[in-house]
Image 1 (spheres, rainbow, N blue to C red):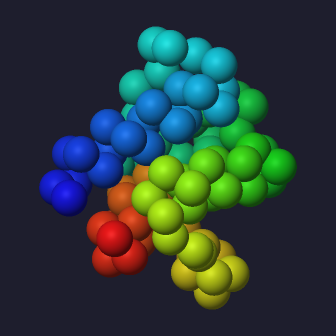
Image 2 (image 1 turned 90 degrees about the horizontal axis):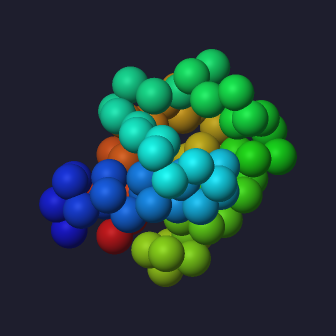
Length: 79
């Protein structure tokens, strides 16, 4: 999968989770950029991404994520 394909799929997940069809994410998007992105939403996002890509994150994998770019890199390594 290309990074763009992963980004598109992850953006769809963000749009579903935040119920906002106009939401656009970039590699630099972080929790501070999206009003409703809290710790519970983080878990929902990670769970949806695991399902979509048929992967399983470990706590150590996600603990240091700073932004969407880090998340995309992690998914790319696991698929």
